[in-house]
Image 1 (tube, rainbow, N blue to C red):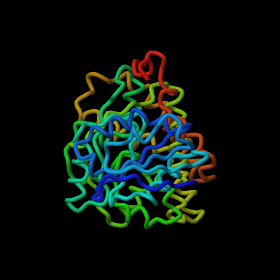
Image 2 (tube, one colour):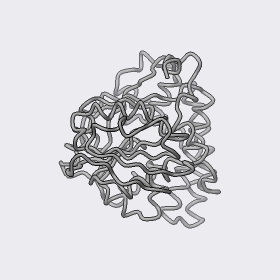
Image 3 (cartoon, rainbow, N blue to C red):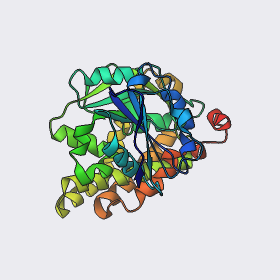
Image 4 (cartoon, rainbow, N blue to C red):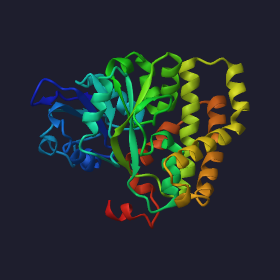
Length: 330
């Protein structure tokens, strides 16, 4: 890994925003343009992690308060890349901006305002950037239900993985476990709750997210995500064999618990008339796949799930349905 010094136009950086290029830095062009629209861009640092600088020059990033390159010869997984960026980030608050997300202009400003209320972990609200398919909605609610907009700002027991900001010192406190925690932030949120750290949803910090719309890709990603999540819980908690077996035995109940939460969030956002009952087909298939993955995660660990997830997380255009309009524009 090589870390190039920050190019800075001012010293008072309040927020470091990490973004990751899978094959090259050029994968991040769209999201960098989004970040440069932020109202507080002068107080933001962009930390760009990629295997090379192809497709991006400093002039494409100039306009924010600071920017830094982290060159990883092989970007294998999100958590590993995010952890490398956190360690060199200049800001006291860090967050991650996916290459397939759009952001309201006051997104960063509202995240910082929430942290200034005294919270160490802040989630942001999410809208659907490619709403043409039911699978896209299923992915949005299945993975991010508690923060699907509209959502009221306030303390929360649940946030959305890869869609949250943290005080940098909190993440650094995980040491060698930071990569695993950032790969599977669901496990991180549970650990924060166990430690008595209160989380917050900033309903006025809004991103518009491109969701997986290929049904095959969605069910596979739920399997990989749930297996990786279970393995991370075991790792951070140093679970004994009896506890791993007990949780594995309980995984047949997981789809019921998750379905209850998904339906609750569909009702909360008043989309039941629009989405029900057809959305149940992709959701049920994904939940069953995810439960199988979670059971294996408790029993056998995560295997290579983090590496297998990375393409879908970092090159979203390859995991969309043919009829998806965003796919045609990407």
